[in-house]
Image (cartoon, rainbow, N blue to C red; front, side, top):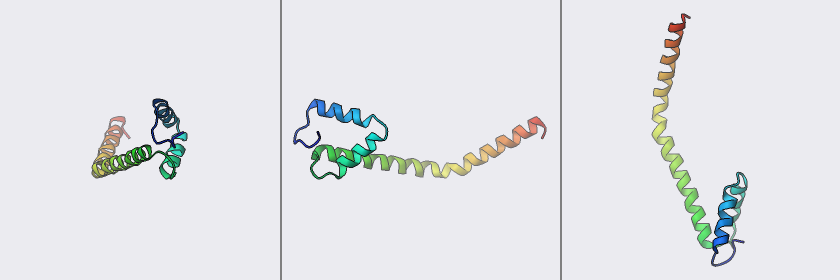
Amino acid sequence: MFQKDQLSVFDWIGYYILMAIPLVNIIVLLVIMFSSNSNETLRNMLWSQVLLVVLVFAAIFFLFAGLVPDIWNIIQELISTIRQYIGM
């Protein structure tokens, strides 16, 4: 299906339908990315999507990693306030 030089509109619709199905999308992604005879444009698009997801997760991790101790302190203060209010 994705081995032609030019993908039709229906090929792209089929691609997006396959990518909407959980777990199937991972298998399709891996097959297309590592297949030597799949469409080069589609393969490059998938590589760019994977790279973008990795970069976004890395940015989220580095942005919020410094906030974890602050959030933990807020939770502890909230628990101690609730305990004082309850009378424990």
